[in-house]
Image (cartoon, rainbow, N blue to C red):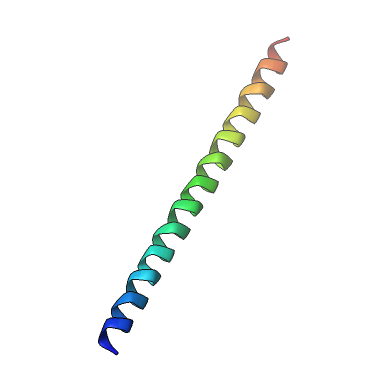
Length: 47
């Protein structure tokens, strides 16, 4: 019983780590998207 609990705990930890990585990736792409958007707007404002 204890062994099953440990494997479940390990799976939960892996799932949390995966979700965290996914969240960071989405946040990063969001940040890059916003940055490029403002960058292009500034370039368009120059011309």
